[in-house]
Image (cartoon, rainbow, N blue to C red; front, side):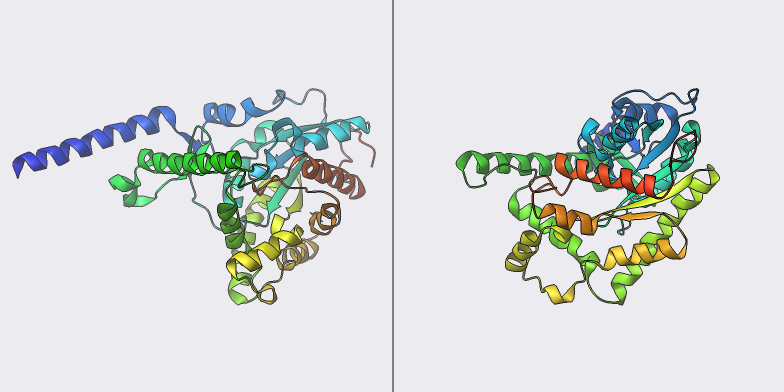
Length: 346
């Protein structure tokens, strides 16, 4: 028994030491809490550096979103928007605070912590209907672009909740998913590749469809998500910046073929859902509070009839989707007069 206890104790101490080393050396906190982490996780990914001091007095747009706000790198809609506005003769610069797996709670936190450095004139908040209504972990950890939620309270000290073990489990699932997809593509079972296997992608979209379900429970989820959005609006006011929302639609709201596939594979009953409901809710709140808001849903449905605007089995915009979003946002900002400062024309 003593030997057994020694073995168990040694294993626990080894895991605890590895956990401390992993947290202290490898992991990054999301959203970042220190300047060093912010530079490494955000500033280093911008296509070009942006000085904190606005010597040229260019109009500063601070982009804020989840992974939709960074997918595509320099061809993301944020940077395409900046390019489009510069080509139209407007003096602007884009500062991108977006990151993967951010919820509005994380977006509010990073805006409060680091927004004052760049003195933005406008907070451009991209709200993704697919999961921004869903509450997220208040703190995330990340290593090699794999994020894991941080356990809170005493449960964080339980071995099975250690971040190292959680990260290894997630990494295994990612590699298994990618390996299975590569084998399927190589064998001709899945044409054209994609980021997820078809069954995984449909499972993700089926879970996101619940945000459109008719009923009072869904309305309560919308209200909970809106509370976090109001924190972002308040942070923008504290910074002396304008706030504008862009509502980013989920592919299942745009792609009728995907909805039919969900009906066949998961027994979805369309009459139980209102695909336009989340957008109407957000637009009504924006109108009530006089908040500039752009809903991309109708536009994407129309454009999506001619060509795909989303990456294959990925849930994010492809290049065409990012370009279409950037054009719509540019027109919206000009139409609403949100670029009036710093000598910009309406």
